[in-house]
Amino acid sequence: MNKKIRNITATMLAGVMLASGSVALTGCGDSLFSDAPMNTISENTVWQNSQLLDEYVNTWYRNMNNGFNIFVPSTIALVKSASRYYMPWFGDQISVGKADWYNAGYGDLLKGNETEISAWARLKWSTYYGEINNINTLLEKQGEITDGEHKQRVLGEAHFMRAYYYYMLWRYYGAPLLIDHTYSPIVKEEKFPRATYKQMVDF
Image (cartoon, rainbow, N blue to C red; front, side):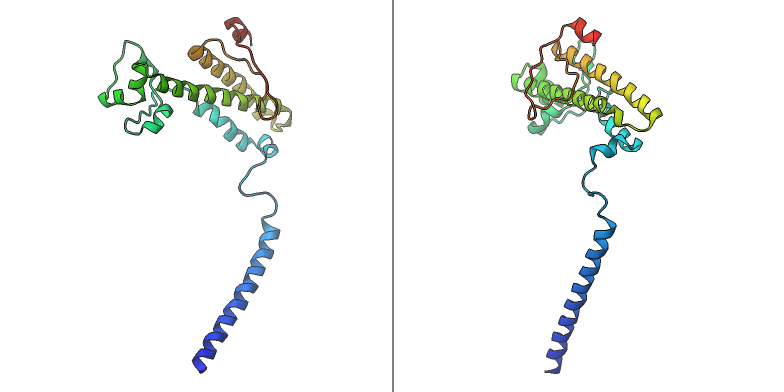
């Protein structure tokens, strides 16, 4: 009987300690971590922090054609369109090193597989216009960037990278759609005509 009472008493004591501990932790957490959400960074914070601004710019570089950086999955059909190819392979002056890559998305493009060509083109199109939209966002928010010296460098990068992505769009698809502001079809539906080569260069 005494053992049973001891177990009940120990359980009740543990419950009281746990409850009082949780109250203490909750009280501490409310005062210590209520400054900002831990899972998101506000847009205003990005423009006023040079390190976050550099993180924002990094994606522009990640989606460039950066030389001999390849990803050619030959066994998983679902990720073929996400492949990264070495563009000189599509010319007639260089050969591909691995024969099994002909079974991958690269081979499908050479064979004129319409589904694969469309998927790869759609990925490039959306990636490049996504980066242009990110750059336009920064250009619209440039008045909120507080670090003057950092601001000049980042704005220079923004103008160069937007020109680069327009050049890539022109190279792949011909006359691009010139978009000089942030665009969201959810907020407002807009249509953009294709620009001539001269319009693109002047822009």
